[in-house]
Amino acid sequence: MALSTALIRGSAQLALDCVSGVTSTAENMHRTIARTSTAWLDGISGFGPLEQIRNPVTYSVVRAVSDALNTGVSRSFAFFDGQLDLTGLAPEESRWVSALNGVCGDHLEATGNVLAVPMRLVTSSGTLDLASGEFSDPLAEAGPNIVIMVHGLGLSEQSWWRRDHPDIGECLNQELGFTPVYLRYNTGRHISTNGQELAALLDDLCAAWPVPVESLSLVGHSMGGLVIRSACWYADKEQRPWLDSLRRVLFLGTPHHGSPLEQAGSFIEAILGTSPYAGPLMLGRKRSAGVKDLRHGNLLDEDWQGLDNNCPLPASRRVVPLLPGVDYYFAAASLGSQESDLKGRVLGDLLVRLDSALGTGSRNYRSLDVKPENCRIFLEKDHFDLLDDERVQRQAIDWFAESKANS
Image (tube, rainbow, N blue to C red; front, side, top):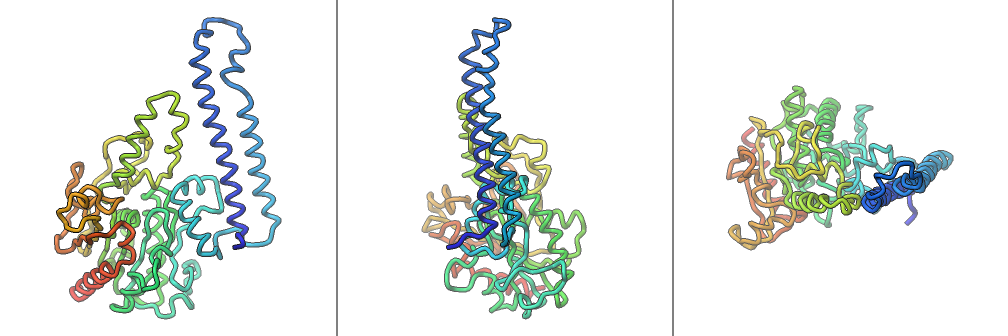
């Protein structure tokens, strides 16, 4: 497979960033050891070699060379023909880039790396150009009822089409006439950042839609559900017009009360961080802002601004209630063969516990206002089965059909 120019350029830039990062890690370790081993020399004045031992210039030289190479790579690619953005990536390249964004997407964006995924709305036919306000081929069959599909951490819109049968969006189109539109976004950014951008993007979509919008529905898998809740909160705060069309929201394995995997990881990291020698090697701290937001299910800027996101503090996020007048549905997966199975209650779907996916039973926050009849647990399934399981699709159709009939 021939690699795209954008992928080569972005990978080279990221590799050189890694060289600088590893150099800084080695330097911090060197300084920690040097300060400890030479502490007895602190009382000796005028000892010139002490500063060289504790602060060698070698690391600064390596970083300077790496930064110069990084600048040179960027300038050199300006002379090459070919796409220098992410348009036209092969499916395999797109999946790799999406996974990379989940790991370090905030860094990619902050450094201007071409591999940072911009937020876009796409269909199975192509990307929608909202700026022009013209939807030609991708939305030739656009209907008045829109359903937006929002993927989870490290995934892309391709994650909805894992097998050969239609995805949830296509099933809703075939059975109920909903027009599916898929969100593509950088999952390494803060959830609140993506939520605010999505809130503005949905205004643009509804304004440019080729037919009058009768209803808007949102479907979010995993982190995607948190991005939806964040977007709804900011849209309500800013009184955005698209909220008038919002009728229903479906959450698929969304960690409303946070992810135990990220909570456990941050706790272990905090223990290791108490050692001055282990501290410089804490590469886990480099995980993306989006991953850290999953610890407690942060939805808003104030949930993380001014806080040390590397510290496993107790959940302090603001309670974000569900919007009135909107039908909310919760689908959770369980590894157990029965709802009472200990395996399912403890492990959930391997990534999200049942109480978190259903928005109930949180010890730190009041439960969401969830109707029991709008919740469903799918047994002997894992987190990613929720994307394309036929029973999940059937339940989504039934829920949406009932909601549509009552609206």
